[in-house]
Image 1 (cartoon, helix red, strand yellow):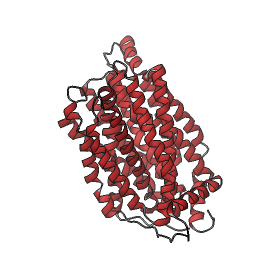
Image 2: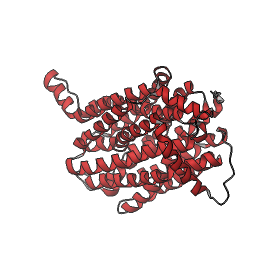
Image 3: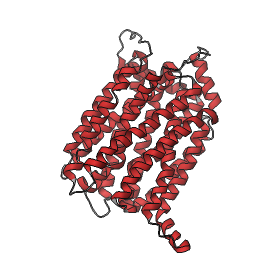
Image 4: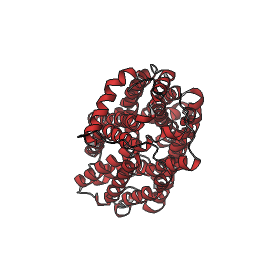
Length: 446
């Protein structure tokens, strides 16, 4: 079998810096600031914000549906033409420009906000799968867990660094503070623009471009290679099972990332101090979890680690749902004056520890199961699974919260994680790695 030498440290750092850069978008636009700004200020249908929540879900679902349609074909073209960096750069520019333009999303301009959100999240989500396709080239299989975990951990540090400016300068999400907080889009774009530069300087394009067959264009070639991959997925049983499991687990994570701070504002009704503290705690616990589980992955196995994170997620969602009752029970039984928002902080740490670790372990598994000659394409399928899951999850939670309210609707996440866990138990990591290595050595034909 072929061995994969470990890439230079500078290249690994350059690759991880894209995680550092794009986490500002996840944190400030999707999770913490702009989601709250869109639902409570730009749409502003108080007191329950159900229309704002639904429009937020629909906009994100539309962007993820676009990724589902584009990602695998783009990945196949990238593999064949050795153009990963060019595709990554295009997604990066799209994200930067449209995120900066979110400044123009204001009360009364709901559709402007939705359109810009769809375009910016489309670019961001494509970039996530594009940059992940470089992972198999960065080291031998036994190092991929640590490398992936390092990238995800650095990403959470990046999100925290980007958030400091928002906390210190832009202030709270409110109608009164709108003229300052609307700068969250341009600030996120600037941070992403500058922090991702090392990726394009230090990361190498290792593939070899192949000439196009006579009379065929890249688009037709991309669709042809995707069809070929789908026909052969039956022989890659563990890869197929992983993608199905990822569909359910990432559906749950998409809901949590999108609604955690909306939930804190609407259900827990936290104050600005608690919101700020949650900012910091989630980033730190997520970074610590990604690093720790990255090491565990390479010792325990990525699949077992993934299953462990799913168990933690189920626990976290149940704690999120029962947070108000936990606070009431602590006072009734023990006389403790815990507020629901204080309990929610502890729950946030449990979720944070699982967040980066779960996503990192799936990225590692794809890297282990993917033949290097088709890594971009298979990471495109990873992106397809994640983003189609996001469409499913966000539409589900959007409709459920409109019917049942946001608190009860969050239990949908626990169901998604439980299904993902049941499927993950059928994955044989050793077999999946062996099949990928046999393909790479020429012992199997795709």
